[in-house]
Length: 254
Image (cartoon, rainbow, N blue to C red):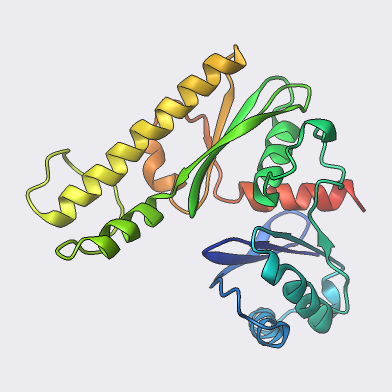
């Protein structure tokens, strides 16, 4: 079985794949100050809750956009499973043309594009990731990375709004029934959800024009399912897309 860990700016996603499905997926809060001992205790407790034997995990892979945690998580994996985790980097075989991968491109985007190209190699792909940041990334049918666009994520925008405006509060993000809200909560919900659906659609349309072909558009990330109904350009919603990219890289680099 494969242990896959995706270290994001807000959450660390920890998942177990049995060869057919993701049988366990956990999300814990990202704290860059966490030590390998603290992460070891969290990882061991989560795994013990499955009732599985430790030896059943025979591979581990880690993707990280938080450098301070990368080695700590890898050490925790070794302490629990006695496995050296594969660390996602541009040097790995990803099915993408390495020379086209930007130096600054995050490992999450690398996983997203590798998985997109693997599942839809017959044409260009766009991946919209609705996470801490809203990212759009693109790859062509030859595996060449075409670039990315980054904006603040939906929750990030709400937190910034609430944190800098005394009378506004945090709201649950769900599709509003109307654009014109009659209270602060419904007004924020409308502005964020409908506003960001317009932002996403505009980015997809402009990127498609630059590509010169109609791309296959995949949405992933925590709020992808919630907002996708407002974005007609999306062809597929896959909450586990980044995890599937991690699994792909693990298979390609055995």
